[in-house]
Image 1 (cartoon, helix red, strand yellow):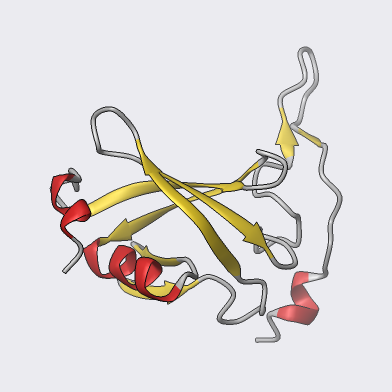
Image 2 (cartoon, rainbow, N blue to C red; image 1 turned 60 degrees about the vertical axis):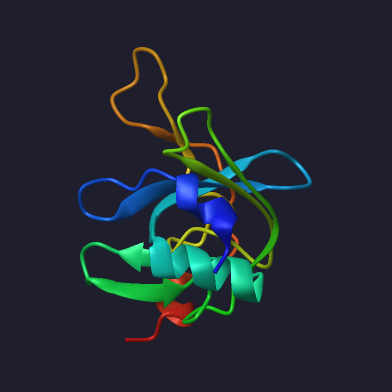
Length: 129
């Protein structure tokens, strides 16, 4: 058991938000939820694991796409209720094919969000359903 994890504050559903950041550039790639098991698997394997609230199950980032995240470091905030996971991203982080999930930007006066990221892959091809 990793005693460092004991002080973390999971919410009433047993989850903690994890902000995932590219270790080389500092770009925020995604935000996802971890439960204790997902966090323990992340620490043990060096690859990010998360908990899907909609599917109610654990998942390994990249299990379908091959676009895995190699963990460089894990930090917590002053309240110990949020994680910052710095990673080396293989491929793209976003299931819509963008390097970062944060590829839309608010533009003053515009009707829609502006796409500011470059799509790295076609999700229809990667996630053949």
